Amino acid sequence: MASMMELGSEEDPCASTFSLVDEDHTLANSLRYILNRDPRVEFCGYSIPHPSENRVNIRIQTTGDPAKDVLKDALQDLMVMCQHIRKTFTNAVDQHKVAKRQGEVSMKSGITEPSTE
Amino acid sequence: MAIEKVFVANNTSVIQEEVLAHRLGLVPLKVDPRLFEYKSESDLANEKNTIVLKLDVVCSRQDGRIKNATVKSEQLQWLPNGSEYQIEKTSKTYTSFSCSQETLPALKDNPIASRYPDIILAKLRPGQCIELEAHAVKGMGKTHAKWSPVATARYRMLPEVALLENIRDSLAEELVEKCPVNVFDIEDLSRGRKKAVVARPRDCTLCRECVLGDGWDKRVQIRRVKEHFIFSVESTGALPPDVLFLESVKILEEKCQRLLVELS
Image (cartoon, rainbow over all chains, first blue to last red; front, side, top):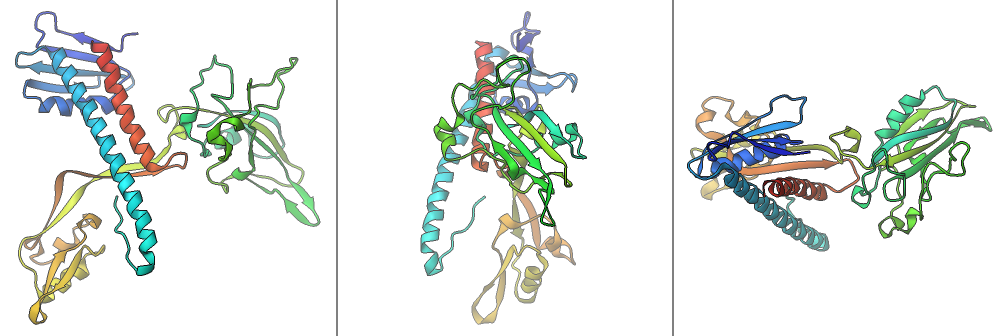
C-alpha cells in the first residue's frame, strides 16, 4: 500500500502535488510552514480532499529545483527541529528538577524557587 | 492501555453489562504503555500485549450494615498470571501467558491498578454481585479517547504588556488594582513617588481589564510575543506530562522519517 504518490511531475519536476495517505494536519501543516520558509519555494499549500478520507495533498511549486528534493529537505529540517526541541526540553526539565531539589533544601532559609511552565 | 474486552461471568446488578463494560473501558490504568506491544485481533493474548484485571464483588448485609454497596475502581484486581476463565470444552484459558507479568522489572514494584482508586463503577444492593474479567490492550487515542494519555493540552502565546508612558502615583495604584491576576507591581521611587512596573507578564490572562477605562488604552498595550509558546499538558495519569511532550515530538519525527524513506 503506497502511502505517498507524486502527481503532475511528468512534464515539469518543479511543480507537483504529493498525495499522502494516513496523514492529517499534524504533518501537513508543519511541513507547509517549513516549506514556506525555503527560498526555493514559489508556492506551497496543503488540502484535505475529504475529511472522512485519511488523505492529504501537498502542492509544491519551486523556482527551478525539483519539488521532490525540496520536500526531502523540508522533511530533514523538520526532523532536525524535532531533535533540537527534544534535546532542549530534556535539558530544561533536568535543570528544573535540580533547581527544585535545591529549592527544597534551602526552604528552611525561606528562599523559594520561581515556578516555570 | 485501556480495557477493551470484558468477560462477564455473573452480573446480577441493575447495571447492564454493556454499560458496565463501557465504564470499565474509560478507567485510566496506572501503567506505562511503552512496556507493551500492540495486539491485533488475530494475535494471541499473551503477557506482552494484554493486561488482565478481575472484578469480583458481592453486596451483602452484615450485622445491619451493607457491604460493597458501591463498586469502586480500587476493587479491580490485577492478575499477573493471566486469565482464570477457561474456554468452553478446552483446557486453555482466554490468555496464553508464558510467564507472570510480575517478573518484568518495571512492573515488579509498580503493580498495575486503576490510577484513581475512587472511581465509582457500579452500585449494588444486597444479594447482587458482579463477577468479571477485563482484558486491557494497547491502543491510540485516534481510535478511542480511552487510550489517550493526555487529558487536556493547549498552548498560548506569551503575553507582552507594554506601558507606553510612565505611570505614576495614583494612576499606578489604580493600575495595580485593576489587574485581576496582579501582573503589575508598584516600584517606590525617591521622594515617596510611585511607579508601576510589569512584574509578571506570564500570568496575564489577556482579560484587557487594564485597557478598559478612560484613556487607559493609550497608556497600556497588550501584545503577544512572536514565536514564544506556552504549552500546558495535562496527563490522565499513565505517563507524566513531560514524557508525553517528548513522546509526541518523537511521533512527529517518526512521521518525517517514514516519508523520507518513501521518497528515497
